[in-house]
Length: 415
Image 1 (cartoon, rainbow, N blue to C red):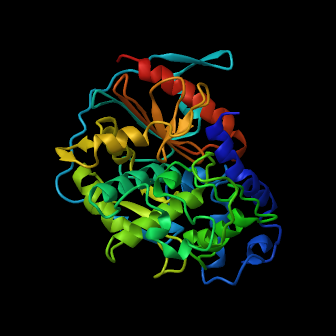
Image 2 (cartoon, helix red, strand yellow):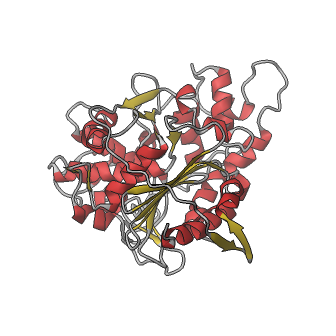
Image 3 (tube, rainbow, N blue to C red):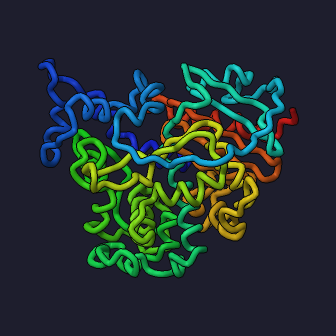
C-alpha cells in the first residue's frame, strides 16, 4: 500500500467505525454516547459536537470541508495590500490518463475523484481552473494535513530570523514542559522529519479510543484540552532520527514551538506577516483552534483553510524556491531540505522531508491532506496543481493513487 495512503488510512480507521455507530440514540438533541463518555463535559453545543464527529462522512464532507468556520472557533490569517497577479492563459485539458487498466478523460477525473475545485499552473500561469459543488473562487477550503507543510515553512522562517537558534537543538530548549516525556533529547529537525520516535499511533478508533483518538475528541470535538499537551505524556517507541512514522502530534509540537518563540504573538499573526501578506493573498485564510476558547491554539497539524488560488500562490512560492511576488519568504536552502526525503526514500512509494511528501519516481513533491487535498509541485515541468477534494473514507487509497497518476500526466502536459 502507498505509504501516504497508509498513514491517512490509519488516521481514519476508527473515525469510520465511529461514524457508523454515531447517532444510535433517537432521543432529541442527545450527543453520541461514544463522545459523551470520553473526558469531561463540554460547553460546545451538542449539535456542533455531533457535526464535528461526523464531518468526514461522505454524505456531508463536500460541504463541511468548506464550512469549517461554522463548526470551529477560528483565528484569521489576514490578507492586506495588493493582490498578487496570477496570469491566466486557460487551455483545454484534452488529455487522457490510465488507471487500473482503463482510460479516462480529465472531465472523468473530476467526478471520479470527488473534486470540489482544481487549479493547474504552468510556468507561473493558470492554465486550468474549475469549481464544482457550489465552490467559488472566494470559498475557503480546509487543507487538512497540507497545513503541516505550511507549518514547516513557518518554522523555516522563524529559524532564519534567529528565533530558533538551530534546527538541531533539542525541542526541550524551547518547550521544557516536554522534558519528562519521550520528546526529551529529540531535535527540532527530527520532529520536522516525523522521526521523533515517540509512541503515538495515528489511529482514531473512536469506538475504543486510544491516545490519538482521545486527544482528537478532547481537543477538537469537545474543546476541553489543547492538542499538543498530550505530547507531555507520551512514551518512546524508536530511537529519535531513525524511523519515519507519520503523526500529527509532531506537527502540533512544532506549532507549540512557534508559539513559544513569537514573543507573545500567535501562529496566525505570524503567518499573516511572514506568509500571507508577502504572498499577496486574495482572501483571508484561517486556522481552526483546538482547546477551550480563549486558551486554545491554532491546529497547526491539520487546521488551515484557504481559497484555491491562495493555496496555488503558496505552491508557486515553494516551486520558486521560497520567492514570490517580489519577496524572499524563506531561503532556497530550506526549501531544498524540506522537499527532499530525510530518511532513505522508497523508489516507488516515496518519502518524507520536513512535512512534505516526496514522490519517489520523480523530483515532484506534495503537500497532502486528509481525504484528497493536494498542493502538488513538479520542478522538472514548472507545474503546480492544487486539488481540493472530499474523498470518501473507504475510497481514500484508490482515489489518492488515481489522483497521483493523473497529476503525473498533467505535469507532462503541454497546453
